[in-house]
Image (cartoon, rainbow, N blue to C red; front, top):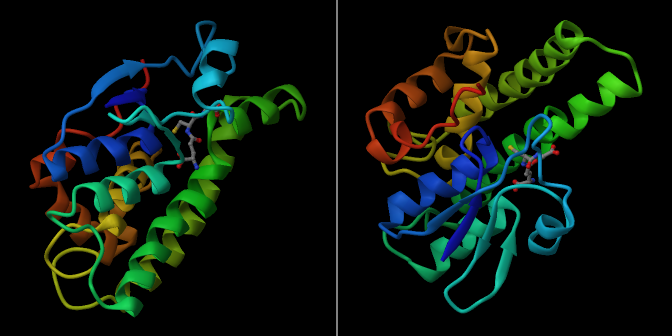
Length: 211
Ligand SMILES: N[C@@H](CCC(=O)N[C@@H](CS)C(=O)NCC(=O)O)C(=O)O
C-alpha cells in the first residue's frame, strides 16, 4: 500500500493512526501542501486525488482511495482486528457522528485552500485567518464536548478501546491546542486526549508542527 501523506496534515494523521492500530504498514509518499513547493494541485497529484487533497491511499490491489473517513473505514473492513467501530448500530452511528463532526464541520473550514482564499480574495492577514480558524475549531469543539458528555462509559470516545471517533478527534484536538485553544475548556475532550496520548499509535502520529 502507498499512503500519499503530509506530516502536518491532520486528515493524513487519521490514516497514519489507523494503520498503526491495525498493525499494517504502507509506504509513505510525501506530498507538499504549503508554500511555493505545494504540489496538491499539480497535474501529477490530481491524477492521484482529483480533489487535490491528502491523504490518498493506493491499495495492494491497485485501487485508489481518497477521503480519510472512507480510507479508515476501508482499513477497518479489510483488516477487521482490532475493530474501530462498536458492534451496536446506534453506537456505530454515534462514533461516525463524532468523526464527521471533525471532518465535515471543523476541518473543512480551516484547510490551506480556505485560508488561501481568505487571504487572496478577502484580503485577510495571518492574524485574521488565525481568528477564523480558532473560531471554527472552538465552536466545533463546544459541540463535540456536548456529544462526548453523553458517550458510553469508558476512558475514550466510545468505551475503552480506540474507535474511529478517537482517530478523528485526536489530530483535531492537538491542532486546536497548538492554535492556542486550551483543552481545559472541554473536560471530556481533554480527558480522552490525555488517555490517547498514552497510546503509541496516537502519540507517534499526531500532525507535525508546520515549519
Ligand atoms: N475531507 C478530506 C479533507 C482532506 C484535506 O482537506 N486535507 C488537507 C490537509 S489536512 C489538504 O490536503 N489540503 C490542501 C489544500 O487545502 O489545498 C479528508 O478527510 O480526507
